[in-house]
Length: 127
Image (cartoon, rainbow, N blue to C red):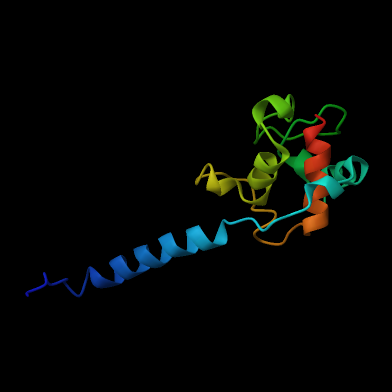
């Protein structure tokens, strides 16, 4: 059986492409997080904290000071996300749903701990 040959110039691109597809599939999986343990008050503090969650830097949040306009306004969240888990996945890694998203993958890059993520989800879910 004869296999088609791959030029030396194309081989690195094919290998890198396969690795990228594998990495995205592995990296984007959110671990099981106890979303019932989330504290909305703690989540609000993280969302407004310019050095931690910093949601306010990119999103309009009613009552927040100096909101950004990069991301969508955080309003009517329960109508936009049918479950807290769906919202958590978006915050964990927005590139899963929208590969070109500018939002940092807060969970995947360990910007937020699992408890902080649960807290932010609890807060944002109330908006």
